[in-house]
Image: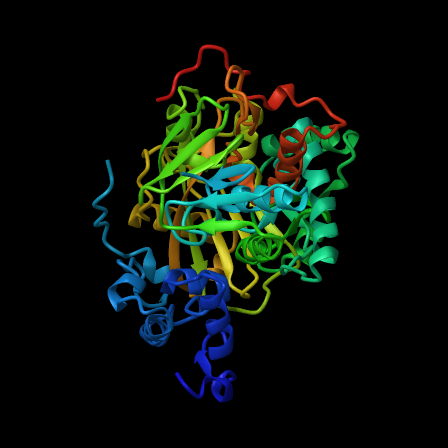
Length: 100
Length: 394
């Protein structure tokens, strides 16, 4: 990312309006996974829950730190995988694996 | 071989980071160690409340007052609002039985200096136009405040780091040994040894396993709290909301107020709070499921049902996410703070259950004063790790 200084204002997370500059600063502060960056900057916390930006953020982290992509990407996704009305969620079938 | 340090803090949640910051500010060389990433534990899966109204008169209420004052000072020191807000809170009352118990509770809290009052249905609806018709009254306190946990943790980290605090993540503690020179040696998964005369166990729900490494006992049990997040919507009312029902059953064991089977099984009670991101956090469950942090469909549905009972209009609002955190619960509902008997320099600061965000600054300040040998105005016997007698780790 050679010309990053010119692109620092570029929006990476559109939902929460987080810029490339904010993400780079977080990485330099030691937040080096997609989840770390999310919690430090709110990138990926909005309506789409990182479905648009998390791979981009993973690549930015990977390029800046040299870590492989699979080390910086989240390991799991959980319900709900997309926004759902509260009333609709009530008709969701129970498939809890962890229920004892 | 060890790195020259004064204090090793085990646990990098809000308590560990706050403690690290206060110790560093007091001139200590500090390393904070965490097995996970940033805000991976309960501190990143919770609401953001500095909540007064849920507290019985006593040390927890007193410490919340002190913690709020500390937050206000930190906001000035850091020149950072950390999204602090003072929206006030209401505890919703559904029937005469709840009202009678809440009247008494509010009276006790008022005598303790909490600015709280009962308001009738009409005034409740003025503050919360979308309340269900069956709400007959409510408490109201303008003191209930909130601050964004992620923002607070990043601020403690940034300010501490600027003064030399080290933070090491994704590298859990696997052993703690006592050395001949009275130092502790803390060994992490990658084999690094950190030596210091003081160790602070700030591992939250995992504090018992850290204590076991030095033969100490910390009777904390993980209690799972699930929370559902709404999409971003405009404010639907002035305040944050809780329900009296659960509180009342805790205050008066034999009262006529009863919980449904679902509420009992999931430990459900309403907490409806507006987050820093303009979404609503809806909670919560209280479940004893060991260290299982998963969210469940049953938990999510339970929370939605509960919320719609108080705010029916929310049915058309979207949910975007659910999360779960393990609240570290102690037998008497008070945190554990202090040095362990017979283990010079080994301290625990854990067991805040649902009050870690609210109580982090005062916990960290008191802990730092203990470690540094500073004068402390109050007695902390009530919080001592030695108060449990012959307790054993589960």
